[in-house]
Length: 330
Image (cartoon, rainbow, N blue to C red; front, side):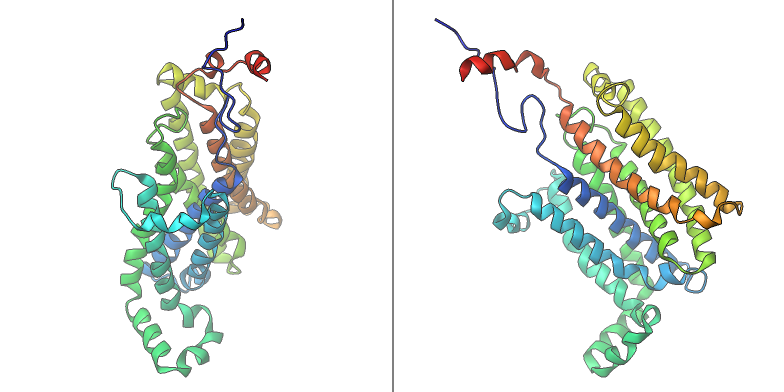
């Protein structure tokens, strides 16, 4: 008579490693961080009255926020198993749940982003002026938004920061996943979101002074991001045995090449060097490369964090998962 261990588990995408979240969630986290950066920079440029020095960021950038966020929400919706139940996020509020906080933050972002757009609609898109002024109600709304542009910007900054930090805290709150379980993820994802937004401005702006301004801003943000990545790795290296084991996934394990080559190398170090050269007046002809690499690196960060985190665990599945036993069960 053969005995079978009850610890022999065979759940698709769960054993021996959890892989529930795939590219849809990584894309959502990336686009959410990018939206946060877009809102913050559009608001800061308005507060600093940089309409002439940074015309794209100050008057046109805000339009991208709801578009980018909607694309991210679409990928998140694709990931949901029970799509018709999405409304249940808004039937309650759980103060201890980062996901609940995130759902309500996302609900707040849309009206704030809309007010940002309306506050600079005429200045950023003069072609819309006749249409806005055609009806008294639209003219009154846009006039009000323009008059309260600074107040709207003051609300947009903390809203964008909250969205950017949330994308990292969403993962770090999962204490069962050692690779995610660190307070560094919130600031890291926020800085990464700001960096990708700065890169987007440098990529899309036609104003040379604005391009240089945001190249300098992005240079500082990349340096800060590298420092936070260092703190993240140190945090894991000085943690428990499970944290050290999780760190091994990117220091000799299966995700080493993706983490160091794609994210750190292509997404951080190379853009850092290219932007340093660009500021010195070298390599202007390939100025488009650095922002594109920053955007690639921003997505790579979310994807590798998602994949490694789902592989890391406090439980040694090797002692519970036996392919030989599963074959005998068939």
